[in-house]
Image (cartoon, rainbow, N blue to C red; front, side, top):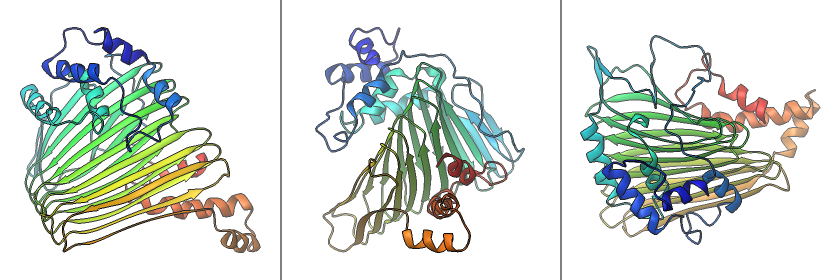
Amino acid sequence: MQIIEEIKKNELVKNPSEIQKICLEKLKLNPLPNIKSELWRHSNKSKFLSFLDYSHTKKESKVNFPYDNASQNVIRFTIGENSSINLKEENYSIRKLKDSEIFDYIKKNISDFDQTDHWSDLLNHCLSSKNNILGLNISGNKIPPIEILSASSYNSFNAKTLILFFEKNCEANLLQINLGDKNSSLCQSTYLCLEENTSVNHGVVSYGKNKSNLLNSLNVIQKAKSEYSLSSLHFKFNYARFEIRINQLDGDAETNIKGIQITKNEDQIATYTKMQFNGPNGILEQINKSLADDKSHSVFEGAIVVPKIAQKTDASQLSRNLLLSKHAKIDTKPQLEIIADDVKCKHGATISQLNKEELFYMRSRGLTLEEASKLQLSSYFQEIISCIPVSKDRWDLLDKLLKEA
């Protein structure tokens, strides 16, 4: 627990900012999350400790983009590159947030942070230096696709923060890529704020190398008439947690969440979602998939919270899981917390294996067992990754996943 020991000894941050001081004080009181809580009870203790067992570094991570086919029609940023950003075109603009805007926003948020629910964000903010925080204000309706890259460094603990403000009537496609180098940990906090009549299609792709770890937190605020779509993929991590918190602030908004996590060997990857409705006429469609092989462990827990004010809510949450080994383990827990009495809400979960009848049929038509299995997996993956905003000719995610499977 090298990071935690450095926090206790005040050796982690020299000349800390006000935000870092606030987070450090909270972490000193409770340096580790409560493992008895629902959000942390499935975490593998040894793997979680290995996530914390690297020295913190402020150095810029060496980034190798996963594909070389860069396009002039894509706007690309890397968290950690300290450069000025001010793009003004006829139909859109992207402006780098001022330090004061970033400071005010983070400070406002951490004042309400619960130690258990937001432990990962507190850890991140006490570690994130100014150079590893990227904040952008985005407006317009004909914005080229935006790509944002975040990476860890070999044998190091890296903390990164991303803040995006989307103005009214904005339409954007956003691809966020998190790369884990071998023997490293990446702590990533992302904040998205969608104003009225804004539409954002957000893809998150996270993958690592040998003994890489990830703590990935996503916090989304939606104003009325906004539409937010999230498609995510997490794989090849020794230990990874993806925490999603979405708040429809005034209701009358639409949210779509699709995610998949793939575990092999002895990996553990977990996804936790909390969907909060704070107004009427909110819509949610959510599906989360897990694929577990070898001796790995996959976890999904999802909560939909519908208070009395959120009448006419229409929410659906489904967890679909594929178990490829008798030694692998999957834990899934979709749940509803409903106070409102005029809603349509449903949830469900399934755990299955590859369909033997389909495999037999395909083999009877000349396919090998390996070919038939990969054809089934292709269908299983495609429902999620087809929604991630990256074109096949630039990065064939399906091909990459089938090679890993």
